[in-house]
Amino acid sequence: MCVSCDATFKIFSVEIVTKELVNTNMELYKEIAHRLFQNKVISNINVGNNKGYVVNDRQVFGFDLHLGNKNNPLTVTLANVENALNGLLDQFEGYYEMKITLN
Image 1: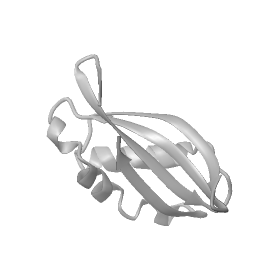
Image 2: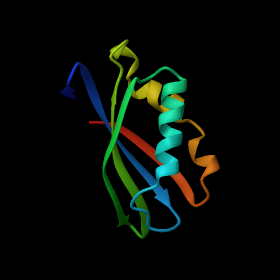
Image 3: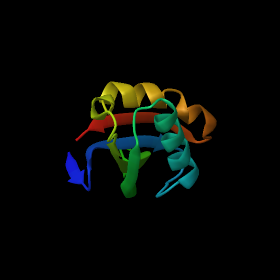
């Protein structure tokens, strides 16, 4: 958890198995933000620590989401984030498995 200005952020790590090595994807970030705002989970979002790497012969795209909601901080939970992002990868070709963890 980190505090910035008047909002408290929780940090979630995201790992996605991809067909090809990926270091960043603005369209993915936009869709993540859209779904989290639409489901009223967050009021603020920052993305950082982007990286592409290989684990056990699998390409992995990883990044951190710094999420906050100054109106209702209790909505920023792992369950709410997972629910809002359920089915997200269906619209991104070459993206297969997503794992989200709370840091």
